[in-house]
Length: 165
Image (cartoon, rainbow, N blue to C red; front, side, top):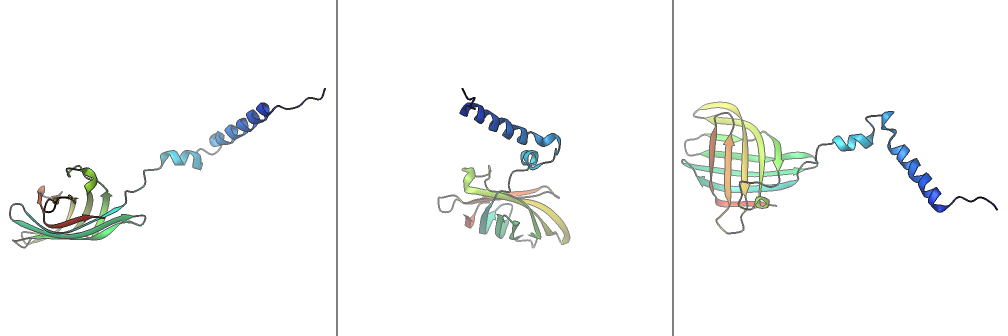
């Protein structure tokens, strides 16, 4: 009788070889196998834009178009009120493709930005967060803005339009 290797033994040998290769991290602890476990989640992508006003302690007028994609978060933002205070974005720090501010979180988005802030005649730099909701009912879009430096908060139903793309 001639000895033969069974298919089961061959499969076991291949599995052991694969396991040995996968467990070679002791020699290279920063190999791609372990690095894949430590990677942050991919950035959220999307776009939200809007133009309008909210009646909050006066009227705040805004226009924005912010996109998050593989190249980062970019776009434009400008807001002002009746007293001449204004806020612009010079850079965008983060983007979230949904917002708990919205009745249906998936209808909205949020972004964090920093930029020049003219407040009561004084120019400074402000960090701020915008939350915007594109609600399916006409006239029911909502907008919120929080300015970190002075604790300012305003939100309301938009006279205008917000679109989540």
